[in-house]
Amino acid sequence: MTRHDLTAMADDVPSQVRAACAWVAGRARSVQILEGEIEAYAAALPPPAELPAPEPATHLVEGDRESRAAFVVCLDAINFGSGWWPTIRKRPGHSGYFTIAAGLTERFRRDGPWPSAELTRLSPGDLAAVLDQDPAHPLMAQYAAALRDVGEHVSADHGGRFEDLLDEAGGSAVALAGLLAGWDAFADVSTYDARPVPFFKRAQIAAADLNRTGVADLAGEDRLTAFADNLVPHVLRLDGVLRLDPGLERAIDAGELLEHGSPEEVELRACAVHAVELLSVAAEWRLSPAQIDAALWNRGAAPRYKAVPRPRSCNTAY
Image (cartoon, rainbow, N blue to C red):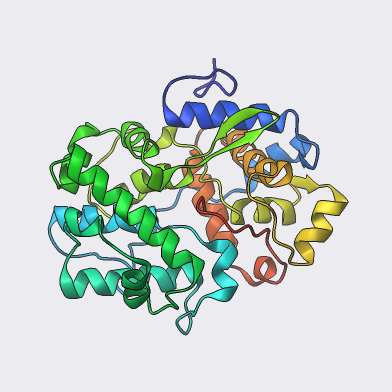
């Protein structure tokens, strides 16, 4: 048996994601993994690299463990909106994600973390003021709803302390992802051919981010899957690992928004996750899926990838 069984469903979140994405990839009609390219592509991947330290301008890097845990969980609870990035007010030199991250960082640095009870009362106007956005923008209501849910769970389940959430995970990245996956703020399950397809991109990346920022020391990060968004499939498409149906390719190149949960959008995410699993196997596990994800995500910032429209969809998943 390989290190990760790519087909058997298990109870933990990464295993559920892994199995469901393999199932979708085996039935996909609009997205194809070119498995003949996997071995050579895996061999050309860079060796594991230490991820750069979080940038202080866009991430809270100081303070006590409680404050930094609250920051990471709150930021990843609202770590979505890529379909709306062209419509928000971006800071000079900042992408959509880093614009939001910078606003949240400044709020935490100025006023400290929101107490969990205060999180439960946040309004779209509150978020707009923190992030310097139009309060009528759809993302502000969605961000406020996500953070209210975080506040409700931390208040009701963890005595108002984010550290208690970390302690309940028992030092396991997989367990932490499982805890967050049960919150509405981190919900991320689509349907394909009448079957649920869990992705839980943000629940898993929160566990990785808590490790990367030094807030926690969670074992089992190598068991996490790729973090299913729109950039990794874009990179894999341009690099010749994914082949798209011509109609889907034309729609993406024309900048058309994909419907979240549509077969094509689910296939893009699922096939990218499964392709990363195949790459990890081909690399004989010298790179975990999360490490490959990071390499491809960083590659996507290069001019070649930015020059071609990436798939976009307005949703709260990524």
